[in-house]
Length: 438
Ligand code: GLY
Ligand code: MN
Ligand code: MN
Image (spheres, rainbow, N blue to C red):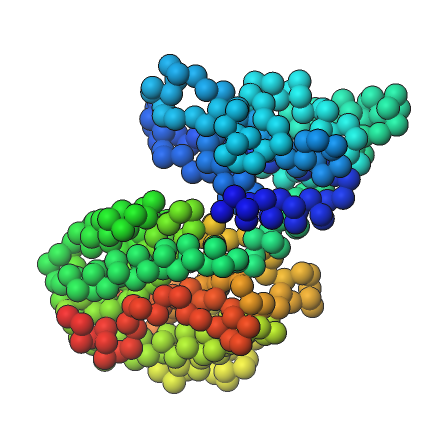
């Protein structure tokens, strides 16, 4: 893997010319009082270094004679390490992570200017850490002030995201291997969830089983708070209380993905708790499934990113018209977004080191993002007949028999040179299969 991190750094450096790029590690996140969450490195930082400790700064200075890659890290401190665990330290940062030079983080202010004063610009992403943003801006200001004396120095700050995130958008073989493993673990968890869900059980029992498997198989844990939503709870898109007792005629919507070695999966399945759909549930389920299949079929190199969403919206709208839930002409309903009370989110997002991964969805108006091999996106249409929804005036009142049904089906799809590969198709979704499995 060290080789791949190096290749990524080289690729980035080849694009920043005489600039210097600065990356900040993620902060520790507080759970409460003095208790912290497990540390999780910032994805950009990790992508370029593989370094997973807090209080670190990475500098890429392609124009520097000797030190093109510099790490500032927490120094080794035996007493602190007894409490909070192993630190790599300054010396090993060079050996283990391939830095040309490493310094203690305490020397950042003193040492950073030497990597900036010959750069023509600073590449830096203004992040959530205001204090660190100020630090970078202060250095920039000082260098501007002293520019006349040197005749060199940065005269602009450019955001790094455009370059770096277009790199992260295309997954390498090594990354795909991690994503396949993240998918495989979540597939097992979803299958197990389907096997054990039954009326009388609580949503949290299913959550516990899913997350047990995540850890049992070596995952870091959930990729995001697991959603185990039965009955009307499925109409809340980010329902995470997971504390309801499931009933005979409920659908259960499970949106749960696994984080494995920093990479993520993101799967949703919806199935009848009691083993059999009601006619209404089945009618809506078949629409969502058809929409998902049509949308997945759009995942081909050369197609636009938005064609996936458009395909889903068309099938969903047609289906809702057929059932009499929407009224009117399909094209017009789509144009006027009349489907939105029942389908209020987008169909896809990029997936990778972040669950909602980086990368643009369009390059500006009229300049769509074109699908390319190596991209991974989710395809996750749904229908949610939310109680008490305000409908457009020209639309019929929703027949009560539909109300409270929420359905989503989500898979992770890799764009391949010839089409696509569904990374998560090991979880059944055909009507017979989600009914039969009980
Ligand atoms: N579970 C988050 C999402 O589907 O986007
Ligand atoms: Mn998703
Ligand atoms: Mn999801």
